[in-house]
Length: 178
Ligand SMILES: CC(C)(COP(=O)(O)OP(=O)(O)OC[C@H]1O[C@@H](n2cnc3c(N)ncnc32)[C@H](O)[C@@H]1OP(=O)(O)O)[C@@H](O)C(=O)NCCC(=O)NCCS
Image (cartoon, rainbow, N blue to C red; front, side):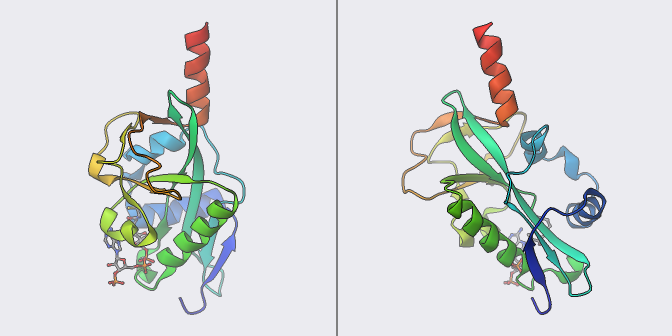
């Protein structure tokens, strides 16, 4: 983490894309979490960058709005979190997550989902949704990689639903009413 500066900011698209390609590979857009971000924008104040002292972008994290259909309960999606392969395992990922979670908590968000590796995210309070609730995503996904962090114990117990970006949830409701 020496000389790395974390800032609340969005990275310019081209710079962020180059970092995400390096961290996730070129097939990254086929991932389940992309379907949850499609057509949405990150939540204001919940995007962070990590840069070297020379200004090189080496890490990003952002949080996106979600709704659990059909009830309409609001939640966040954490992702993408990426740290450039040149500088991994120096605590940059942890610093980005901790900064992001602090800001999300301060904004009052009490439920956060992500699609990722439980062995990495458990240290930040995330756990697999199964067996707590029964949550689906649009399209195929590996249930063992759908994780959540709730500020209140038992927050997901018995909850069933489909995670959607808010605009898709609204569009579905309008179609039902028509
Ligand atoms: C996952 C990622 C963000 C971690 O960033 P980082 O800055 O290297 O993380 P930290 O320095 O905070 O933590 C590193 C530790 O996490 C471990 N770790 C990293 N990825 C892991 C994973 N997928 N599963 C389990 N442990 C993992 C490392 O082995 C390391 O352990 P160590 O401290 O015992 O050596 C980064 O490796 C990355 O961008 N990977 C590619 C994209 C990705 O997988 N993003 C996350 C979505 S699942």
